[in-house]
Image (cartoon, rainbow, N blue to C red; front, side):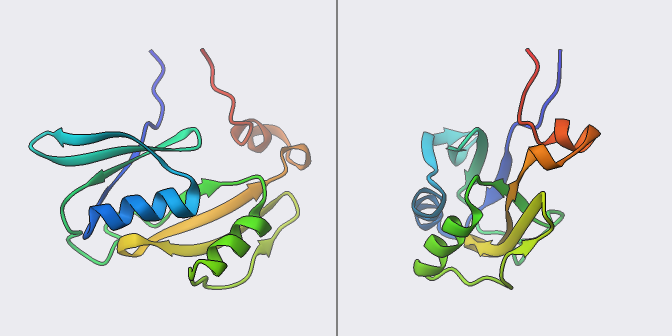
Length: 137
């Protein structure tokens, strides 16, 4: 058996507003919305990744032990423009390191997102393999 990271699970102060944000801002799709383990849970797909939302307010200001969640895109400039137009506030402009560029912004409940774009053709060795998004069967 091969293990892999399956999902990130967030507490939410307003689960319906949080669902709408992930849908509207990053194209999230609700796969399941119901009782799971005694509380309302919503399971979403964001591209090939997964996000789980728990209907219970965060116990702190969004960080806990999580620094940020990485969201990969193939057009960072367009994503930044769309989110800014929707009122999302960014800490800075896009930081460009050639093969890799990123920008940070908040999601609901003060969860910090790293939105990033990578050009795999400019990477070598382990970094190229890591960002290939290929999974073994």
